Length: 139
Ligand code: SF4
Ligand code: SF4
Image (cartoon, rainbow, N blue to C red; front, side, top):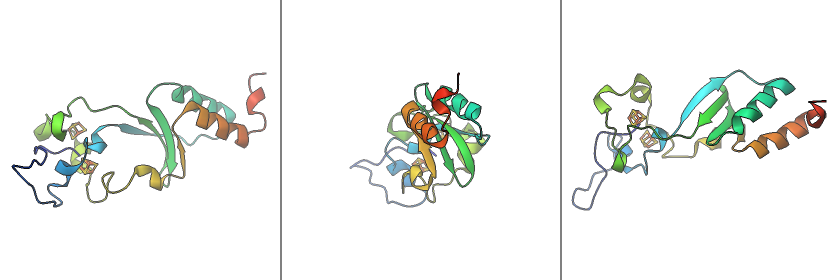
């Protein structure tokens, strides 16, 4: 999670270490979205509801080894220019617990996803393949 340190500059070159890593992270990647675990969708009705959620801007869905998750691609309002956290001393526990040991800086999260739907159209296409009755679900 975003650091309280300023970004490296030519005048003040930081060594890349575990402690300074977040200062090198463009845009503080992990401070630009939230995820929320959701029940595993099983029925046509479940997927239709997911489709409604993906009809909204900046909402995505993925499945990995831990289950299904909604993603809201929204920047934290406390993330300042140069990747600084403006509430660093009182930031939420989740931010404190987040490890930068192997994070978005090292690899895109989607590398670990089994399924990833970034748009309404992608999920709709998946549902059409999964359910023969998908297109006639309202009749
Ligand atoms: S993505 Fe990793 S390196 Fe970047 S701010 Fe978050 S924890 Fe730090
Ligand atoms: S509170 Fe600070 S560390 Fe947590 S997401 Fe927002 S900017 Fe990042």
